[in-house]
Image (cartoon, rainbow, N blue to C red):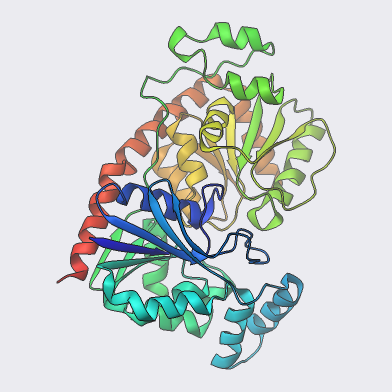
Length: 412
């Protein structure tokens, strides 16, 4: 079958979020189908500037068709307009202006879909929020699968999204929490639906071992059994992380909870904590110049998983999540997680897996951090629980079978 994925930006170096999720699914599906990705030339989601060349590319076995954006985003003006539209009466035209200013805005992508949609057996749209999905899904709803990656936020209350969810015929939800939220918020009349999520790659299948954290790196190495002596040591050596550390990975900005994370971790340090906070990903905010905050930069996928193995705890500070591949990847390699309790999906992961703790405020963050760092056995049990949770719910064969059922529903 010929299948198109439509997503706002796409690239091997774009890690985290719905774009990474889309790429993982597209690459797996390309093993048995003719897969194309239709996307924009943007690399940066703040400005949507055209950084990739327009035209056809090939990335990890997937054909990628890129279309130029006709404008960039003025983030300051957009934020001001968003504040107005979320708090004042307005028209549908105002909302469409907001959608265009949000970006990405690619007339060429929409024209291609209008001309070629009938040539695809299925079109899979990732992320409800952006124009490629809102405008594109309406071209041929009965040939389209929506992967909303949605959570409760001001934008989702706009009327244009009520229209979007009302016309969706087939939906792949990320979690039961997202499914309940969307179906209780919108009048959705679906032909087919699945709670799908995303598969998670495991680096190894050996039984987990307790996390040992001697200060000396050589002692760390000797403390592990032979088959696990490489676990995390490469990342630790490269970034001079000899003791315990919390790890965050993804976009490093205030919107993902990173500013609050650093404030809370500062309180932990002020109370005598001796661990380090490491951050990997794209830095979109200023980091404090203190020895206990380490910036690891943008890592390859292999290095990211090595970092997740090396971490004592992986922290997920975002208050808005629809799935959180960061949390699932941490669980997959046996590292416990510490999550923001304002994200219902994260709380659900923690409760169902018994592989992590969650915090509501600064004090709970500090106490959870102290507890996790002090108790090796607790971390070990959580690590084992997390591995089992991922195996049970996020194996690739299970995920792809669900997509097969959704695609089959389009052809009825």
